Image (tube, rainbow, N blue to C red; front, side, top):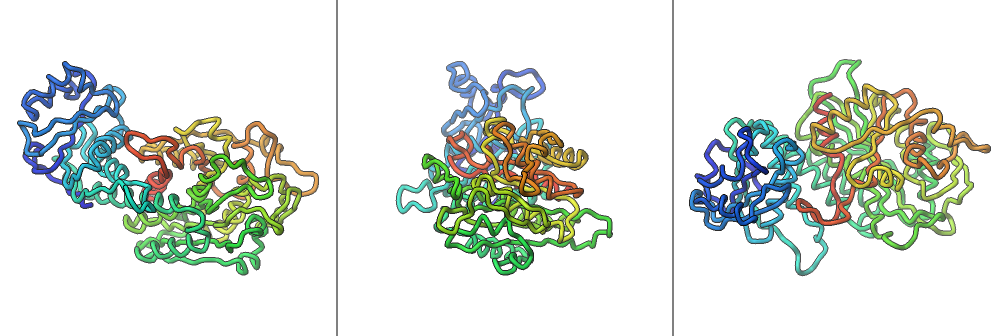
Length: 491
């Protein structure tokens, strides 16, 4: 689809559907429901009196053939109280409006940037909201697919900048590419195929891509990663994507390292998972997919910072050659690990990937992984858990997440948690006791980050929509991509 900006009033834009934002009440600061009377021939007030148009968050009302506008239909989407509006709300409301009419043959949409958002934030919210809402995970259906026919979106924003539009388009396209990868099942996207697709996407936008094979990783001592992959018929790989800024940074400039877990299917290995919902373990590579997506947007937006993505990819299977509980592996860093649970495999492959990223000169690290069920117990499916070893770096990532409209919650770390990983036979164990599992998993990774500024994003609860939302279908979210893009631009 094509997005474009205009200073033409919404009512003067010819389109199949016009979208407007409404709020609960009218306190004089932000126009309420009656603002839309002139564009609907007075129907907005009538619908409000009947309870059809309330302004409640993500509620939708449709006016057919609005008397005051050229569009064939007008969709009015509720944003809730004016005191609660935010960039993320505007984005999700734009998505809700589009999902409501997505399969009705609509080819063209006109949208009035949300009032009070600021021109650039409003433009970004509309682009990302509609672009993300247009995603559907039914690509492998042979019939009854929910296809969209949307061709163009025109945004009415008097002061909207082309730069904001370009940034939003790059971000949403990258996030959807990540979602497409996460949506693929394990039989169609084993590690080598993921590498092929990732490199094809990267090279199409001018990025360098390298794939380390099993022999290369063995020569570098990546025993933790290779131990996880032992029983799979599919060989492990490590995907390395490099972006180099055109304006050469100074020697003391940051080098951003993005590390993403990409277990293309996770049975748990010998410590096998219950069969219920195991099919969802195809999305255990969402962290790696987020890094691929982020690099695509970074290539388009050209920030003045070097960025290297490191994506370790394996399949975790049981079998005669599988890693056993009690095995001891030696990581690339030289640290030894006692494997107490083979289903705690993500931290093992990330340990070697973090060491490799540091070896490549990365000075600031962010890893993302569907790492623990414990983070879902702690935060549910709303917030991503965020851990880090450097407060300034943690603050910067949190700031980027807020600017990007993603919810991330800082979690604790400390030597008390690291001590829970003590092993009598190795440098550390790959799991701690039952309680605080998300924290001990992060503490494990912290051991390999060392003195390098590092943040860990546990996206186990936020990488997948378990239920259909007004603005999104069940399936992958692409979480992390907007924050990482914002972070690179800030750096």
